[in-house]
Image (cartoon, rainbow, N blue to C red):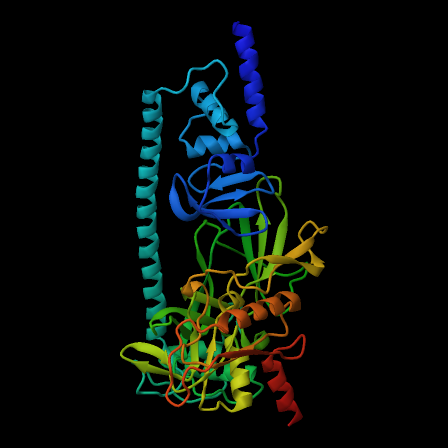
Length: 511
């Protein structure tokens, strides 16, 4: 009799092991998840709560929760959802029973006391998870506030690149013109600026460096008045260490060859300022006009496009990949604070009561990913008085998230066999307002500025996504003399392989 019961239980367990994650999720009534890809759903965990910490991938037959280990079978999913400890035989068999929807062979049904004990354990887990979530959210909010305050302070303490006394505590810059003399040092900045700092004039030299940089990027044309653009004389460039890797940097325009000299950085496992340079800094402002972040562009008048050229070599020192190395060029633009949902104000904004707001009398918005590309369009249009010019900072903040992906027609993934998946042209539905930059409600015409020297397929899909997203005016506000007209959105494309700065440069050469 005992052998018969054991055989029946073994068969019962074997059957339970065949139950997939997808089948178990349906049987256990998992709900409240939203599709994030063709086969994956995510949302609040039925046990831990949260907003998106729990996910089920039906295609791969896997589930995951950031508050647990995850698994690839129905039994582990049932154990997680019902607070069962599968290291205990009774709980393991209970998990098997739950995924099969029937009792363990030969076992008496769960008693009322056993059910109450199990539900009590589950309630304790949920309460502990909720307390941890609240604590974690409070920490994240505090960290976000500190970062926003730091970003705002960095912008506020910088010097204006041109006099504009009626704006928010803007210091007076002094003059325009390029920085003269000296070669760029290995640290990526001009000795002329260092000399100016020694003479007590770092602010005016930094402002001049920004204006010289913009003039150079705009093909020799003077930039429009940028009341919110500021300059920092010497901004440190911080680099984070990478676990299990040694990091080295090389300063030079060309990709380093075998004989290149490298300097090790972050050797003690801590962040390191690998160089300092003058920087252009502009604020990110949210829809209310509050400064919530800042955008930094590091400058070097002798570098490519007027910016430093620094290469990073990362060498893996442990594990199966020991000895492997990668070389990449470090970005010369950084962001602090937050950018999601915000804009970088260029022209057409006004300062009022400590806020930076779009001029409601201007019905047209020109916006793109990068500051310089948008300014090139502004120069070419001679900055008409009915237009607001702004930048999103990056393509993600301009276009927003996609509803799905599609296979790239030519590029392959890292394995080299399957097509690379690219974010599609349709915006993800039900996104919160701060998920990407917002256009002022008074705007009725938008011109999106594309970048032709980025990967064309992904960029085209992103611009289509931006067009679709920004064509909707969620809170239309009547403007005197215009009523509530619909919003039109179009995209301006430069020649492939170029941006509008290149177009201006060619026009300057042809003049």
